[in-house]
Image (tube, rainbow, N blue to C red; front, side):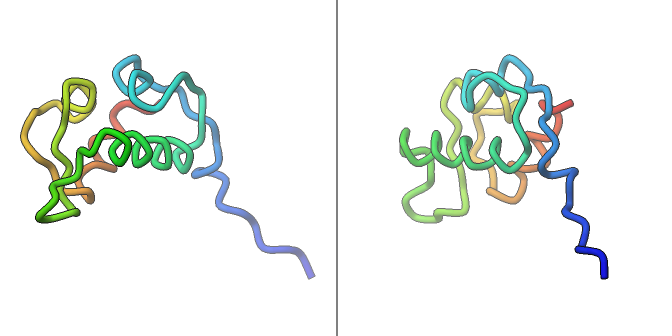
Length: 86
């Protein structure tokens, strides 16, 4: 019996744009690590909306990644971050 294949797409180190590197650090790093570092930054700098924790309120660095200073939903965040990975 062969062991199940791991989902290597998530673990593959990705190149990170300069804007995203300003938030999560220099790459390359896997998507999972990018997400983890992004949440570390959001929590450290208190960027979650206190009334609705699903919303992220961008500061200057996050606005460069998200392309807007408007609050975004955490589910939109992944899609916006994907544009900074290659």
